Image (cartoon, rainbow, N blue to C red):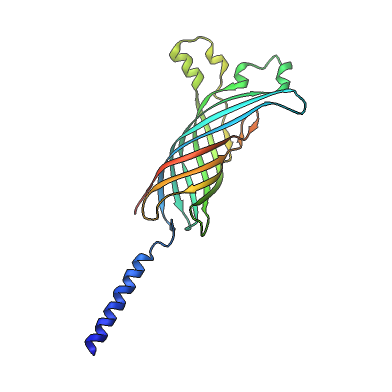
Length: 221
């Protein structure tokens, strides 16, 4: 009888240990999880004419992001995100009042900077639907050179640099909605759509784009 009781106790202990081990990760992510991701993104904004007044109004914006992201999970559903991107963007912004201003130059209208971008964001994995990924934050964009100006130096096209300026520091506010495909015990990808109001020197634009985090590596697991 004692042997049977001892055997039952041993089975209960082993079963509890197995279930406890399986219960270590209840969620797709857990507090203190850290991820390092490879990030690719692109955005576009178009605006050509005011249909109500038929007055000329032209804006064009195209950008891309290449870089790394770092995620730290505060809770299983909330993460803080930062990183570092190379962010080339090309913009043409025309305002009606420019037509009567002789001081306006091409470089005031056309810009092609290469920026270093530092994201400061928070993201949520929706409880009970953790594959849904939502987020918002601020991007700090620091222009480091004019790509058109650099092209002028390389190609020797004199005067090309006068059509461009790298512009000044600006902030943008990314708003994300998408899908988190990262496995609970492994890495994986994310795909999400992004609205990014950008507060440029000449105008505030709201480009729309898509971001692909090709792969996110778990750190420390």
